[in-house]
Amino acid sequence: MGDTAAADGPKVDGGLTGTKARIVDTALELFARRGYDAVSVRDIARAVGIKDSSIYSHFVSKDEILDTIFGLMRREFIAGLPAEADLERILEKCPPLAFLERGFELFRQRVSDPRQARIYLVLMREQYNDSRSAGLWHQHQEQVLAYIEAAFRLMVAKGLLNDLDPRQMAFSYEYAHLLLLAEYVRLLCQGQDTAGVEARIRSHREFFLEMAGAKK
Amino acid sequence: MGDTAAADGPKVDGGLTGTKARIVDTALELFARRGYDAVSVRDIARAVGIKDSSIYSHFVSKDEILDTIFGLMRREFIAGLPAEADLERILEKCPPLAFLERGFELFRQRVSDPRQARIYLVLMREQYNDSRSAGLWHQHQEQVLAYIEAAFRLMVAKGLLNDLDPRQMAFSYEYAHLLLLAEYVRLLCQGQDTAGVEARIRSHREFFLEMAGAKK
DNA sequence: TGTACATCAGTGAACGCGCGTTCACTGATGTAC
DNA sequence: TGTACATCAGTGAACGCGCGTTCACTGATGTAC
Image (spheres, each protein chain N blue to C red):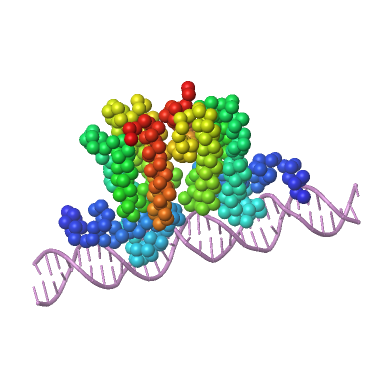
């Protein structure tokens, strides 16, 4: 119904247009920087350039703005991993190191869009305050872990790595990796230098594969 | 001056007695569970069993309560690592696996005191909202990393591990470990079952040493 | 032992403020005839 | 083409509420003489 009409306005967020999209974008930026609790509806309205009450022409509550952002995460972040079915094909072209490099490169491309980086940061920040956030964060972690595990399993099967438990490898590799990615995104959003943490991410990757007996 | 008088009352927090200590303890519990922002001065007073305004007979502001808690962290948590000078002696008795087990066991004993667990949780929770917390958390991480690195360096020197870069080992081991410890403390404070995460901590430890070529 | 005074944890009522939200409204735009 | 009506993003003023904090006070306890 409104779909064709919506396509006329500037399309910013998935399916959202005009002022509503600007509210979400602005809120996302403020939430990422200062946290949901520390940002008031007045702050958002001021940054968008409308009056406080106008927010309620688009959202029934402040919480619905956050919920919309969680919706973005669900669609744009959680659903963003390559299919496990493609793994076989990918691994034919990529040796282990290239595969893990590729994983980080995809992540880096994704969060090079400030909106995606902010979504990730809000997800992290609010995980202690909001059960929706905690659930999404957990789901994201599990999904990545399962993916990496499948990849390591194939690598071991192909004899590219020592014969170690793929699930253990996935845990030990990805837990450290997740902490480093979180730090990376935090620095990115704050406009600080990410070279140091990028170097640590690279080191971790190379070092882990060296320990796992990957062929050079 | 007041020192001898203070020793009369019930000594709860380091150097604090009576109501003041109860305020800190109660605030610590509430902050750990719901976060600093979500807990009001009235909440704390009600839980302690005094009137709101009585809080200000002991603290000049709500922030000073949080600051007192950060002070506890500084004294009780950050300063709690064994000296690096003792490493040589410890490692003579402990093979690598026993050493890492011992590290977790010390941590576990520490956070088996609910207050210590809550201090750890508040430190984690507030790291995005409070620069003091972020600083302490960072300092804590660096301290642990340096300690582990020194231990790995000695193990390599003794030929107990493969000849790998001790700093890299410390990063890859401890980053994942830190994430798991955080999860462990979170579950502990919420009174949930910690068996699963304890198993993962154990697995990570054993698996990492296996990869690093530790003798069984 | 009794009296006068100082100290100080704790009280009760109130403060100003910013919060999320409501609501009657305006005014521009699109639609029907 | 002109008029009447519907829609709806945006406005301005106000709401009740809970927040952190203040302040004059009470009343118990300790101290000096």
